[in-house]
Length: 148
Image (cartoon, rainbow, N blue to C red):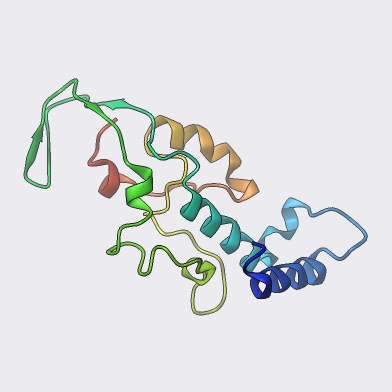
């Protein structure tokens, strides 16, 4: 964040406006901290908490993009690659928190944003949703191919 001082100043101004300087942030403040949440998500996207997701096993023979994945195949998602895919993230090497803001300036997380991976880990991490760390109720089928 040190090299993005303008963004840092905007985040500080948003926190000051929503939370003030006399108390700590509360969960109730979350909806008013759109830029702050977008910056957190962009940091998670760019830094890839882990470069590879946890291994999963194909529960059954599965077809994915024309390839057969036999039952019991061990699968590992390449988180680093997903977060640098030009089809999903234009200019992936650029720090652009606005990719997590809609036209009204409200924070939103696209389904491709999976910093905690897919499958069981994503389910566990949904407990952190109220802290703004991961999406709840997202359909991740497109990224997991329906694999467990």
